[in-house]
Image 1 (cartoon, helix red, strand yellow):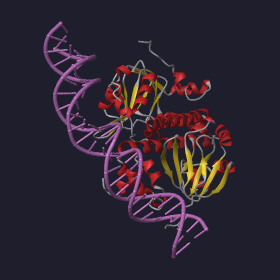
Image 2 (tube, chains in turn orange, cyan, brown, yellow):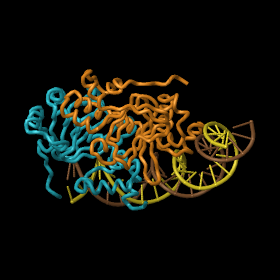
Image 3 (cartoon, chains in turn purple, orange, brown, yellow):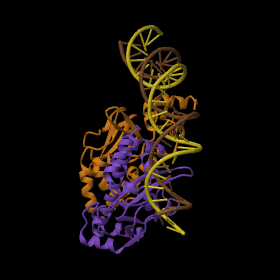
Length: 193
Length: 193
DNA sequence: GAATAATTTTAACAAATGTTAAAAATTTTA
DNA sequence: TAAAATTTTTAACATTTGTTAAAATTATTC
């Protein structure tokens, strides 16, 4: 197993956009480092979760849930952002659940204080804009992948992207990400298709 | 048929967020009003289309295309935004095609000049942030609808949302929005299911 | 390390949807 | 308004995938 990837606070922030040291400092001042155990719950769809989280190390799963189904939207690796956009923007319960699949380190930014910075620091306002824009594009790419690629192709992509994690992720999670039943995923893995 | 809905320039801009009159004026100065015929093409996936469009009247279709398939992502009614986010952000060819299904009026905002305003006018920077955030949420809601609702339910939603347009939209477009074949959509309409 | 629990694979069958193609209906054009 | 073109519906069949349940494998706990 490779060594664990750990991303610094500043690198988490700069993932979206260059930021001057002063603005990074202002963001750092409203941030908190959290050390979380495997299987912790970061964001719940029926709770208001306005804050943003940056994943410094570990692995997270983002999913939607109804009474009878659970659909995995994404797996997030270090450097990625964990956010319930609807909750962050509207201060109301959002759509996503986010769990940590591995022991993880996250940086939490307080939304209320962040919104205040948006009004006073134009660099941070543009950083926040960039974050929303780039998250939009990532979500769009996920949507396109799901619409145009087969489950087999997407499984191969996952293997490529998370070789070190994939063994430890439950098949049910992967199947719900691919949009097929667990049985079909087993068939894919067995190369029956 | 009901009378045609027409949204003003200022209302198009304010759809996302309150904006002070001075900033509205600055946006208006870098905007252009375009009167377009039914079936005009606004955005092509292999072309760079950095500018943003606001639909003041008419109807648009947003879709992705591959060699063998075309998938409709969304229908956009007056007040909505027409944008290829990837192209707008990265100045490279984006993913979406956008056609006008009716005679339409759009306001085009020059991206380069808009980016300059983002750096000098913090209200506009936050307006741009809000735009990206709210477009993200709309896209997320579309994704959720597609993931959790049946084609029948989504067809009913469409009928509800666009009663005045739906008759004039080709079945093939609607089927590709619902994610089923045209034959299945015919079955849905015939209430065979 | 044996026993228990959880997860994954395999099998058999049912149901839903796609494909192809032809018929019917509607719209457009001359 | 008749003819041509386009769009929509219907039918028949094949294929894929889901469901349920049992067997096999792997992981966890005592």
